[in-house]
View 1 (spheres, rainbow, N blue to C red):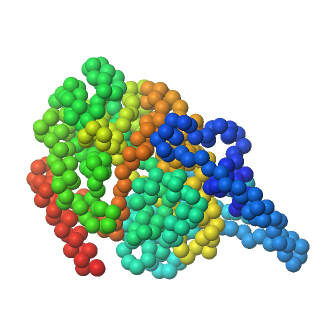
View 2 (tube, rainbow, N blue to C red):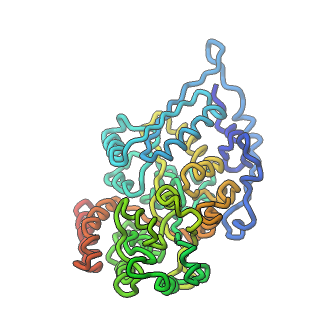
Length: 466
Protein backbone atom coordinates (compact mmCIF):
# COMPACT_ATOMS: atom_id res chain seq x y z
CA UNK A 1 0.00 0.00 0.00
CA UNK A 2 1.04 3.63 -0.45
CA UNK A 3 0.93 6.30 2.21
CA UNK A 4 -0.39 9.67 1.11
CA UNK A 5 2.14 12.40 0.60
CA UNK A 6 0.88 14.40 3.56
CA UNK A 7 1.70 11.44 5.78
CA UNK A 8 5.34 11.97 4.89
CA UNK A 9 5.47 14.08 8.03
CA UNK A 10 5.85 10.80 9.91
CA UNK A 11 9.08 10.24 7.98
CA UNK A 12 10.39 13.78 8.51
CA UNK A 13 9.84 14.68 4.89
CA UNK A 14 9.03 18.10 6.27
CA UNK A 15 5.72 19.00 4.59
CA UNK A 16 6.61 22.61 4.73
CA UNK A 17 4.01 24.34 6.78
CA UNK A 18 3.77 21.74 9.52
CA UNK A 19 6.15 20.97 12.30
CA UNK A 20 8.35 18.11 11.07
CA UNK A 21 8.11 14.73 12.69
CA UNK A 22 11.26 12.80 13.40
CA UNK A 23 12.83 9.57 12.27
CA UNK A 24 13.43 6.88 14.88
CA UNK A 25 16.53 7.63 16.89
CA UNK A 26 16.57 11.33 16.00
CA UNK A 27 15.81 13.57 18.96
CA UNK A 28 13.33 16.34 18.40
CA UNK A 29 15.68 18.97 19.76
CA UNK A 30 18.39 17.83 17.35
CA UNK A 31 16.71 19.65 14.48
CA UNK A 32 15.69 22.74 16.40
CA UNK A 33 16.72 26.13 15.10
CA UNK A 34 19.00 27.95 17.49
CA UNK A 35 18.73 31.58 18.46
CA UNK A 36 22.19 32.13 17.01
CA UNK A 37 21.04 31.49 13.46
CA UNK A 38 17.76 33.29 14.01
CA UNK A 39 19.68 36.47 14.77
CA UNK A 40 21.09 36.20 11.31
CA UNK A 41 17.51 36.37 10.04
CA UNK A 42 17.79 32.94 8.51
CA UNK A 43 15.52 30.57 10.33
CA UNK A 44 11.83 31.29 10.42
CA UNK A 45 9.29 29.62 12.65
CA UNK A 46 6.60 27.73 10.76
CA UNK A 47 3.17 26.41 11.49
CA UNK A 48 -0.05 26.47 9.50
CA UNK A 49 -3.09 24.47 10.51
CA UNK A 50 -3.51 21.63 8.01
CA UNK A 51 -5.94 19.56 9.99
CA UNK A 52 -8.72 19.60 7.40
CA UNK A 53 -6.38 18.86 4.55
CA UNK A 54 -4.67 16.08 6.49
CA UNK A 55 -7.96 14.38 7.31
CA UNK A 56 -9.01 14.44 3.69
CA UNK A 57 -5.64 13.42 2.32
CA UNK A 58 -5.14 10.55 4.76
CA UNK A 59 -8.45 8.78 4.07
CA UNK A 60 -8.03 5.15 3.05
CA UNK A 61 -7.38 4.50 -0.64
CA UNK A 62 -10.37 3.66 -2.83
CA UNK A 63 -10.70 -0.13 -3.11
CA UNK A 64 -10.20 -1.78 -6.47
CA UNK A 65 -12.81 -4.04 -8.05
CA UNK A 66 -11.44 -7.12 -6.26
CA UNK A 67 -11.61 -5.41 -2.90
CA UNK A 68 -7.94 -4.51 -2.56
CA UNK A 69 -6.53 -1.01 -2.43
CA UNK A 70 -5.47 0.22 -5.85
CA UNK A 71 -1.78 1.09 -5.73
CA UNK A 72 0.58 1.33 -8.66
CA UNK A 73 4.23 0.58 -8.06
CA UNK A 74 6.61 3.51 -8.45
CA UNK A 75 9.95 2.61 -10.00
CA UNK A 76 12.12 5.71 -9.79
CA UNK A 77 15.47 5.84 -11.56
CA UNK A 78 18.21 8.21 -10.40
CA UNK A 79 21.51 8.84 -12.18
CA UNK A 80 24.49 10.39 -10.43
CA UNK A 81 28.23 10.59 -11.07
CA UNK A 82 29.24 10.85 -7.39
CA UNK A 83 29.74 7.74 -5.28
CA UNK A 84 28.81 9.44 -2.02
CA UNK A 85 25.66 10.87 -3.61
CA UNK A 86 24.69 7.39 -4.80
CA UNK A 87 25.10 5.94 -1.31
CA UNK A 88 23.10 8.80 0.19
CA UNK A 89 20.26 8.44 -2.34
CA UNK A 90 20.07 4.70 -1.62
CA UNK A 91 20.00 5.29 2.13
CA UNK A 92 17.18 7.80 1.81
CA UNK A 93 15.35 5.55 -0.66
CA UNK A 94 15.31 2.69 1.83
CA UNK A 95 13.70 4.92 4.44
CA UNK A 96 11.24 6.32 1.92
CA UNK A 97 10.09 2.84 0.96
CA UNK A 98 9.78 1.72 4.58
CA UNK A 99 8.06 4.80 5.95
CA UNK A 100 6.29 6.57 3.09
CA UNK A 101 5.46 4.28 0.18
CA UNK A 102 5.79 0.49 0.40
CA UNK A 103 5.34 0.28 -3.39
CA UNK A 104 8.27 2.58 -4.04
CA UNK A 105 11.41 1.22 -5.70
CA UNK A 106 14.57 3.24 -6.26
CA UNK A 107 17.26 2.34 -8.79
CA UNK A 108 20.39 4.49 -8.39
CA UNK A 109 23.00 4.30 -11.14
CA UNK A 110 26.50 5.71 -10.60
CA UNK A 111 27.96 6.62 -13.98
CA UNK A 112 31.26 8.29 -14.82
CA UNK A 113 31.01 12.09 -14.99
CA UNK A 114 31.39 12.65 -18.73
CA UNK A 115 29.44 9.56 -19.75
CA UNK A 116 26.53 10.36 -17.49
CA UNK A 117 26.11 13.95 -18.62
CA UNK A 118 26.48 12.97 -22.27
CA UNK A 119 23.89 10.19 -21.92
CA UNK A 120 21.38 12.45 -20.20
CA UNK A 121 21.84 15.19 -22.78
CA UNK A 122 21.46 12.80 -25.73
CA UNK A 123 18.38 11.23 -24.15
CA UNK A 124 16.73 14.60 -23.61
CA UNK A 125 17.52 15.68 -27.16
CA UNK A 126 15.79 12.57 -28.49
CA UNK A 127 12.54 12.90 -26.59
CA UNK A 128 13.63 11.43 -23.29
CA UNK A 129 14.10 7.84 -24.47
CA UNK A 130 16.26 6.04 -21.94
CA UNK A 131 16.52 9.02 -19.59
CA UNK A 132 16.27 8.63 -15.80
CA UNK A 133 13.53 10.21 -13.71
CA UNK A 134 16.02 12.29 -11.71
CA UNK A 135 19.51 13.28 -12.82
CA UNK A 136 22.32 14.78 -10.77
CA UNK A 137 23.68 17.49 -13.07
CA UNK A 138 26.98 19.16 -12.19
CA UNK A 139 26.94 22.95 -12.41
CA UNK A 140 29.81 23.08 -14.90
CA UNK A 141 27.89 20.95 -17.39
CA UNK A 142 24.42 22.28 -16.64
CA UNK A 143 24.74 25.25 -18.98
CA UNK A 144 25.00 22.90 -21.94
CA UNK A 145 21.46 21.69 -21.26
CA UNK A 146 20.19 25.22 -21.79
CA UNK A 147 21.28 25.40 -25.43
CA UNK A 148 18.04 25.17 -27.39
CA UNK A 149 14.39 25.94 -26.79
CA UNK A 150 13.72 23.47 -23.97
CA UNK A 151 16.22 21.74 -21.66
CA UNK A 152 13.88 18.79 -21.14
CA UNK A 153 13.81 19.32 -17.38
CA UNK A 154 10.90 20.17 -15.11
CA UNK A 155 10.66 23.81 -14.01
CA UNK A 156 10.17 23.51 -10.25
CA UNK A 157 9.90 27.22 -9.40
CA UNK A 158 6.15 27.04 -8.70
CA UNK A 159 6.54 23.87 -6.66
CA UNK A 160 9.27 25.47 -4.57
CA UNK A 161 7.17 28.59 -4.10
CA UNK A 162 3.96 26.78 -3.22
CA UNK A 163 5.78 24.63 -0.67
CA UNK A 164 7.40 27.67 0.94
CA UNK A 165 10.85 26.30 0.12
CA UNK A 166 12.09 29.49 -1.51
CA UNK A 167 12.23 30.95 1.99
CA UNK A 168 14.21 28.00 3.29
CA UNK A 169 16.95 27.85 0.66
CA UNK A 170 20.00 30.03 0.12
CA UNK A 171 18.64 31.22 -3.20
CA UNK A 172 21.99 32.35 -4.57
CA UNK A 173 22.86 28.66 -4.83
CA UNK A 174 19.78 28.03 -6.95
CA UNK A 175 21.07 30.55 -9.52
CA UNK A 176 23.21 27.72 -10.91
CA UNK A 177 20.09 25.89 -12.07
CA UNK A 178 18.02 28.92 -13.00
CA UNK A 179 17.57 30.47 -16.40
CA UNK A 180 15.08 32.98 -17.78
CA UNK A 181 12.98 32.89 -14.62
CA UNK A 182 12.80 29.10 -14.36
CA UNK A 183 14.43 26.80 -11.79
CA UNK A 184 15.39 23.35 -13.01
CA UNK A 185 17.12 21.74 -10.04
CA UNK A 186 17.72 21.68 -6.30
CA UNK A 187 21.35 22.17 -5.31
CA UNK A 188 22.86 19.54 -3.04
CA UNK A 189 25.08 21.84 -1.01
CA UNK A 190 26.01 25.32 0.09
CA UNK A 191 29.66 24.83 -1.01
CA UNK A 192 30.88 27.71 1.16
CA UNK A 193 34.50 28.62 0.50
CA UNK A 194 36.70 29.11 3.55
CA UNK A 195 40.40 29.42 4.27
CA UNK A 196 41.99 26.18 5.48
CA UNK A 197 45.32 26.80 7.21
CA UNK A 198 48.10 25.08 9.15
CA UNK A 199 47.28 26.37 12.62
CA UNK A 200 50.44 24.94 14.15
CA UNK A 201 52.77 26.74 11.73
CA UNK A 202 51.09 30.14 11.91
CA UNK A 203 50.85 29.92 15.70
CA UNK A 204 54.53 28.98 15.86
CA UNK A 205 55.36 32.09 13.81
CA UNK A 206 53.38 34.28 16.20
CA UNK A 207 50.58 34.96 13.71
CA UNK A 208 47.07 35.29 15.14
CA UNK A 209 44.91 34.04 12.26
CA UNK A 210 41.74 35.24 13.97
CA UNK A 211 43.06 38.80 13.77
CA UNK A 212 43.31 38.80 9.96
CA UNK A 213 40.59 40.96 8.48
CA UNK A 214 41.56 41.78 4.89
CA UNK A 215 43.54 40.04 2.17
CA UNK A 216 46.26 42.63 2.78
CA UNK A 217 46.47 41.28 6.33
CA UNK A 218 46.74 37.79 4.89
CA UNK A 219 49.62 38.81 2.63
CA UNK A 220 51.52 40.22 5.62
CA UNK A 221 50.91 37.01 7.58
CA UNK A 222 51.98 34.94 4.60
CA UNK A 223 55.27 36.76 4.37
CA UNK A 224 55.99 35.79 7.97
CA UNK A 225 55.87 32.06 7.13
CA UNK A 226 56.95 31.87 3.47
CA UNK A 227 60.44 30.85 2.38
CA UNK A 228 61.98 29.72 -0.90
CA UNK A 229 60.60 26.22 -0.32
CA UNK A 230 57.48 26.91 1.74
CA UNK A 231 54.65 29.11 0.55
CA UNK A 232 51.64 30.47 2.36
CA UNK A 233 49.38 29.57 -0.56
CA UNK A 234 49.15 28.78 -4.25
CA UNK A 235 47.89 31.25 -6.83
CA UNK A 236 46.27 28.77 -9.18
CA UNK A 237 43.16 28.14 -7.13
CA UNK A 238 40.34 29.07 -9.51
CA UNK A 239 40.32 32.84 -9.90
CA UNK A 240 36.54 32.80 -10.09
CA UNK A 241 36.37 32.03 -6.35
CA UNK A 242 37.84 35.43 -5.57
CA UNK A 243 35.83 37.16 -8.30
CA UNK A 244 32.59 35.88 -6.80
CA UNK A 245 33.70 36.91 -3.32
CA UNK A 246 33.94 40.43 -4.74
CA UNK A 247 30.33 40.26 -5.97
CA UNK A 248 31.05 39.62 -9.65
CA UNK A 249 31.26 36.56 -11.90
CA UNK A 250 32.24 35.53 -15.42
CA UNK A 251 28.58 35.91 -16.48
CA UNK A 252 26.01 38.31 -15.05
CA UNK A 253 22.42 37.67 -13.99
CA UNK A 254 21.18 38.43 -17.52
CA UNK A 255 23.51 35.91 -19.15
CA UNK A 256 25.99 38.43 -20.53
CA UNK A 257 29.63 37.40 -20.40
CA UNK A 258 31.61 39.64 -18.07
CA UNK A 259 34.89 37.74 -18.07
CA UNK A 260 36.74 40.76 -19.46
CA UNK A 261 35.39 43.18 -16.85
CA UNK A 262 37.87 45.24 -14.85
CA UNK A 263 37.11 43.32 -11.65
CA UNK A 264 37.83 39.92 -13.25
CA UNK A 265 41.10 41.09 -14.78
CA UNK A 266 42.23 42.88 -11.62
CA UNK A 267 41.53 39.78 -9.53
CA UNK A 268 43.68 37.57 -11.74
CA UNK A 269 46.47 40.16 -11.68
CA UNK A 270 46.24 40.14 -7.87
CA UNK A 271 46.61 36.36 -7.76
CA UNK A 272 49.73 36.47 -9.90
CA UNK A 273 51.13 39.21 -7.67
CA UNK A 274 50.98 36.83 -4.70
CA UNK A 275 53.91 35.11 -6.39
CA UNK A 276 55.57 37.86 -8.41
CA UNK A 277 55.31 40.78 -5.96
CA UNK A 278 54.67 39.43 -2.47
CA UNK A 279 56.55 36.12 -2.65
CA UNK A 280 53.97 34.09 -0.71
CA UNK A 281 52.66 31.81 -3.48
CA UNK A 282 53.50 29.76 -6.52
CA UNK A 283 51.61 27.55 -8.92
CA UNK A 284 49.84 24.62 -7.34
CA UNK A 285 51.26 21.25 -8.43
CA UNK A 286 48.83 18.93 -10.17
CA UNK A 287 47.33 15.70 -8.90
CA UNK A 288 49.28 13.58 -6.43
CA UNK A 289 52.15 16.08 -6.42
CA UNK A 290 49.88 18.57 -4.69
CA UNK A 291 49.12 16.24 -1.82
CA UNK A 292 52.74 15.22 -1.53
CA UNK A 293 53.59 18.91 -1.13
CA UNK A 294 50.83 19.38 1.45
CA UNK A 295 52.11 16.42 3.47
CA UNK A 296 55.64 17.83 3.31
CA UNK A 297 54.44 21.19 4.64
CA UNK A 298 55.23 23.07 1.42
CA UNK A 299 51.88 24.89 1.39
CA UNK A 300 50.26 26.31 4.50
CA UNK A 301 46.79 27.43 3.38
CA UNK A 302 44.19 26.44 0.84
CA UNK A 303 41.13 28.34 -0.27
CA UNK A 304 38.47 25.67 -0.68
CA UNK A 305 34.82 24.72 -0.33
CA UNK A 306 33.25 22.57 2.38
CA UNK A 307 33.95 19.36 0.46
CA UNK A 308 37.67 20.13 0.50
CA UNK A 309 37.75 19.21 4.18
CA UNK A 310 37.21 15.60 3.16
CA UNK A 311 40.13 15.82 0.73
CA UNK A 312 42.46 16.73 3.60
CA UNK A 313 41.31 13.78 5.66
CA UNK A 314 41.69 11.35 2.76
CA UNK A 315 44.97 12.63 1.37
CA UNK A 316 46.82 14.01 4.38
CA UNK A 317 45.69 11.91 7.37
CA UNK A 318 48.99 12.34 9.23
CA UNK A 319 48.31 16.09 9.51
CA UNK A 320 45.27 15.54 11.70
CA UNK A 321 45.10 18.15 14.45
CA UNK A 322 47.29 20.62 12.56
CA UNK A 323 44.73 22.24 10.24
CA UNK A 324 41.89 24.62 11.00
CA UNK A 325 39.43 26.67 8.95
CA UNK A 326 38.19 30.25 9.11
CA UNK A 327 36.12 32.64 6.97
CA UNK A 328 37.94 34.21 4.05
CA UNK A 329 39.68 37.54 4.60
CA UNK A 330 37.67 40.31 2.97
CA UNK A 331 38.58 42.57 0.07
CA UNK A 332 37.40 45.57 2.03
CA UNK A 333 35.98 45.91 5.50
CA UNK A 334 32.34 44.85 5.60
CA UNK A 335 32.72 42.67 2.49
CA UNK A 336 31.75 39.05 2.06
CA UNK A 337 33.77 36.44 3.96
CA UNK A 338 33.07 33.60 1.58
CA UNK A 339 32.60 32.49 -1.99
CA UNK A 340 31.19 29.39 -3.66
CA UNK A 341 32.76 26.70 -5.75
CA UNK A 342 31.24 23.61 -7.27
CA UNK A 343 27.74 22.26 -7.04
CA UNK A 344 25.40 19.58 -8.32
CA UNK A 345 21.66 19.87 -8.76
CA UNK A 346 19.00 17.15 -8.62
CA UNK A 347 16.84 17.67 -11.72
CA UNK A 348 13.55 16.00 -12.67
CA UNK A 349 13.23 14.91 -16.31
CA UNK A 350 10.12 16.14 -18.12
CA UNK A 351 9.39 12.84 -19.84
CA UNK A 352 9.42 10.82 -16.62
CA UNK A 353 6.32 8.72 -15.98
CA UNK A 354 6.63 9.69 -12.32
CA UNK A 355 7.12 13.46 -12.25
CA UNK A 356 4.94 14.00 -9.19
CA UNK A 357 6.41 11.01 -7.39
CA UNK A 358 9.90 12.26 -8.24
CA UNK A 359 9.02 15.66 -6.78
CA UNK A 360 7.76 13.96 -3.60
CA UNK A 361 11.08 12.13 -3.34
CA UNK A 362 13.03 15.35 -3.95
CA UNK A 363 11.13 16.95 -1.07
CA UNK A 364 11.87 13.98 1.16
CA UNK A 365 15.58 13.97 0.37
CA UNK A 366 16.69 17.43 -0.74
CA UNK A 367 14.18 19.58 1.16
CA UNK A 368 14.04 17.98 4.59
CA UNK A 369 16.15 18.36 7.70
CA UNK A 370 16.94 14.66 7.96
CA UNK A 371 17.94 14.38 4.32
CA UNK A 372 20.31 17.33 4.49
CA UNK A 373 21.83 16.33 7.83
CA UNK A 374 22.43 12.78 6.71
CA UNK A 375 24.03 14.00 3.48
CA UNK A 376 26.51 16.08 5.49
CA UNK A 377 27.33 13.03 7.59
CA UNK A 378 27.90 10.93 4.47
CA UNK A 379 29.46 13.47 2.07
CA UNK A 380 30.71 16.47 4.08
CA UNK A 381 28.47 18.74 1.98
CA UNK A 382 27.03 21.47 4.17
CA UNK A 383 23.34 22.11 3.38
CA UNK A 384 21.94 25.21 1.75
CA UNK A 385 18.60 24.20 3.31
CA UNK A 386 18.45 26.73 6.13
CA UNK A 387 16.34 24.78 8.68
CA UNK A 388 19.07 22.12 8.81
CA UNK A 389 22.01 24.46 9.43
CA UNK A 390 21.81 24.46 13.22
CA UNK A 391 21.17 20.74 13.61
CA UNK A 392 23.41 19.38 16.35
CA UNK A 393 24.60 16.54 14.11
CA UNK A 394 26.28 19.15 11.87
CA UNK A 395 28.12 20.70 14.80
CA UNK A 396 30.74 18.64 16.58
CA UNK A 397 34.40 18.78 17.50
CA UNK A 398 36.24 17.62 14.39
CA UNK A 399 39.42 15.89 15.51
CA UNK A 400 41.20 16.44 12.21
CA UNK A 401 40.59 20.18 12.35
CA UNK A 402 41.98 20.62 15.87
CA UNK A 403 38.63 19.99 17.55
CA UNK A 404 36.98 22.79 15.59
CA UNK A 405 33.27 22.88 14.75
CA UNK A 406 33.55 23.10 10.96
CA UNK A 407 29.79 23.22 10.59
CA UNK A 408 29.82 26.38 12.69
CA UNK A 409 32.30 28.02 10.31
CA UNK A 410 30.18 27.09 7.28
CA UNK A 411 26.98 28.33 8.92
CA UNK A 412 28.69 31.58 9.95
CA UNK A 413 29.53 32.52 6.37
CA UNK A 414 26.27 31.28 4.83
CA UNK A 415 24.47 34.67 4.83
CA UNK A 416 27.22 36.11 2.61
CA UNK A 417 27.07 33.44 -0.08
CA UNK A 418 27.42 35.08 -3.50
CA UNK A 419 25.51 34.02 -6.59
CA UNK A 420 27.11 32.00 -9.36
CA UNK A 421 25.23 32.76 -12.54
CA UNK A 422 24.51 30.10 -15.13
CA UNK A 423 24.82 30.42 -18.89
CA UNK A 424 24.38 28.07 -21.84
CA UNK A 425 27.89 29.13 -22.85
CA UNK A 426 29.66 28.61 -19.56
CA UNK A 427 31.15 25.20 -20.35
CA UNK A 428 32.40 26.52 -23.69
CA UNK A 429 34.01 29.49 -21.94
CA UNK A 430 35.67 27.14 -19.44
CA UNK A 431 37.11 25.06 -22.28
CA UNK A 432 38.55 28.12 -24.00
CA UNK A 433 40.04 29.40 -20.75
CA UNK A 434 41.42 26.00 -19.88
CA UNK A 435 43.69 26.11 -22.91
CA UNK A 436 45.10 29.46 -21.81
CA UNK A 437 45.69 29.21 -18.06
CA UNK A 438 49.24 27.94 -18.27
CA UNK A 439 50.24 30.76 -20.62
CA UNK A 440 48.87 33.20 -18.03
CA UNK A 441 50.73 31.50 -15.18
CA UNK A 442 53.95 31.56 -17.21
CA UNK A 443 53.43 35.28 -18.02
CA UNK A 444 53.39 34.50 -21.73
CA UNK A 445 50.00 36.17 -22.04
CA UNK A 446 48.27 38.72 -19.84
CA UNK A 447 44.93 38.14 -18.11
CA UNK A 448 43.57 41.21 -19.90
CA UNK A 449 44.38 39.86 -23.35
CA UNK A 450 43.22 36.31 -22.69
CA UNK A 451 40.00 37.30 -20.95
CA UNK A 452 39.15 39.75 -23.72
CA UNK A 453 39.88 37.18 -26.43
CA UNK A 454 37.77 34.47 -24.82
CA UNK A 455 34.91 36.84 -23.98
CA UNK A 456 34.73 38.06 -27.56
CA UNK A 457 34.71 34.50 -28.88
CA UNK A 458 31.74 33.71 -26.64
CA UNK A 459 29.97 36.90 -27.72
CA UNK A 460 30.43 35.90 -31.37
CA UNK A 461 28.97 32.46 -30.66
CA UNK A 462 26.03 33.96 -28.80
CA UNK A 463 25.33 36.38 -31.63
CA UNK A 464 25.49 33.60 -34.24
CA UNK A 465 22.95 31.51 -32.31
CA UNK A 466 20.63 34.39 -31.44
